[in-house]
Amino acid sequence: MPGAGKQMTRSKSPVLLLLLAVLALSLVFFLFSFHSPSPSSSDDPTTLLHPNHQPIYKPETSFVASLDRFLLAHKSSRRDDTVLLTTLTQHQPNHLDDLIFQTHTQRLYADPYYPLNLPIRVYVYDMPTKFTYDLLWLFRNSYRQTSNLTSNGSPVHRLIEQHSIDYWLWADLIAPESERLLKSVVRVHRQEEADLFYIPFFTTISFFLLEKQQCKALYREALKWVTDQPAWNRSQGRDHILPVHHPWSFKSVRRFMKNAIWLLPDMDSTGNWYKPGQVFLEKDLILPYVPNVDFCDSRCISETQSKRTTLLFFRGRLKRNAGGKIRSKLVAELSGAEGVAIEEGTAGEGGKAAAQEGMRKSVFCLSPAGDTPSSARLFDAIVSGCIPVIVSDELELPFEGILDYRKIALFVSSSDAVQPGWLLTFLRNIRPAQIEEIRQNLAKYSRHFLYSSPAQTLGPEDLVWRMMAGKLVNIKLHTRRSQRVVKESRNICMCECKRANSTTSGHL
View 1 (cartoon, rainbow, N blue to C red):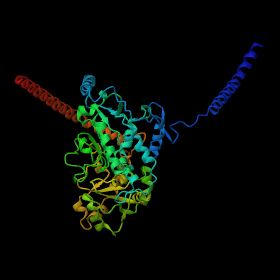
View 2: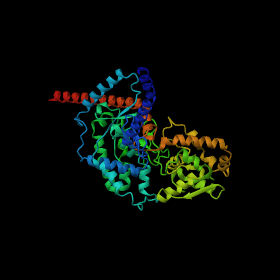
View 3: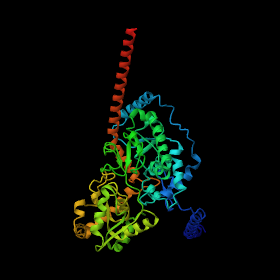
């Protein structure tokens, strides 16, 4: 019957729909099982995602581990000493000047914020390998020689690591763009497009690992190589960046490059390391030391809070020269006091472990001046979650135009610190709420002092270029003034030569 057929069809419809739904779910489950993807780069603890979705390595903050990866990646691309910059030669400074004028004019009328703009355009010199890769390999092949000490007993390779800012900046600048994260700086390959020129010479490695005369000879070669470049002659080096982060490095010849922008650990107001007029804040830039201890993140700070039973901790050389003489006075005042731990020690492997353990067990870490007003200990304390107590009256700090150190450290004058009982009374009277606030700020600020590969946004490499952007207008101003003076001098010489020639002709 027609009516019966319709009723049967209606009764089968729900069953059919249910069966189709089950089949569909089974198919989806099968497809996901069959194509079960491997963990994405964002889930893999060893990789991150670049903004363009290409996988990159997780940030590596260990100098040795990062160097291993860097040298492996660049092993096949090492070149001989033939340097191919552009078609320009040292005899064509006027041609380079014309090209730069054209480029800057185009930017002036195209960019409403020029010259206050980012990213900064940096030309990286392709120097002979004896100034770059060969020195990195020398460190890599000898860093396990822990018996290699300086005259005062400090481990040489640890010192090189603490001053390895030249490596971290260069490794980021020459990395493939697909692996870089920083937006504040971009590498350019034509000199006329550059705002600044980076000199990738490892002055600290060469100072500590080469024989004295060999080192001085290499310094002279580097000086000649750089000062022969047309871009250097155009500006007399005012737009060139020279990393000389250890105060002993490049010392024998650096007076000839005093116009360049020096990357320093501090300004050394004592005058023991830099001659008057060689360094000043308007020209040069202070960079933080590379921390010698492992990073204690916010979770670590929280977990170690109950273990911080020492009030004040210090480990390092107890006697130093110049401004560092304050250390012996502090030792005399604080030794044996309740809640205070003061230890003699260096930055070797055992010293690193002892310093790290001591800092993570302490509320405050003493940071007095060393041979210069700065000390690597300050940055070890910051990344350890230990509140720095800075006793250094002449100290200039990295990135002070951007960072407010009052939020993460306590500043104490030398005269107050050595008064009997003053310092410990001051520290004990700080409210727990204030201590907790500073600790939280330390957890946030630590990122600004962690060099890494790849370089991270708001890391020290990034802040270098943000600070450089503030200097760029003055750099261009002084460069153009120097060019004007040089041009006027040349014109005077030409006039005198013509006058002399005409006088000579009249007498003939």
